[in-house]
Image (cartoon, rainbow, N blue to C red; front, side, top):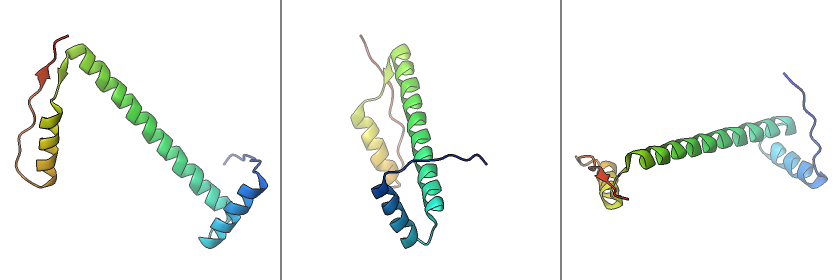
Length: 94
């Protein structure tokens, strides 16, 4: 396991210690949890952005899209457990 040194402002170090104590953790464990959580969040955000850019490129290449009201109705029906058919794609003209 690699060792990394962090220089923390005194007020942040105090806050971390208080929260760690309140949760029954060491300050070290608290910071590891916080760093792990933030790393996972950022990885998910970057993956979402990558998927969005891929979808945008696909849309720009194909010109295929879906009417928002059709998608909303489809999702409402699915959430309510109703049988529904997928929205039909529409070709956009430029």
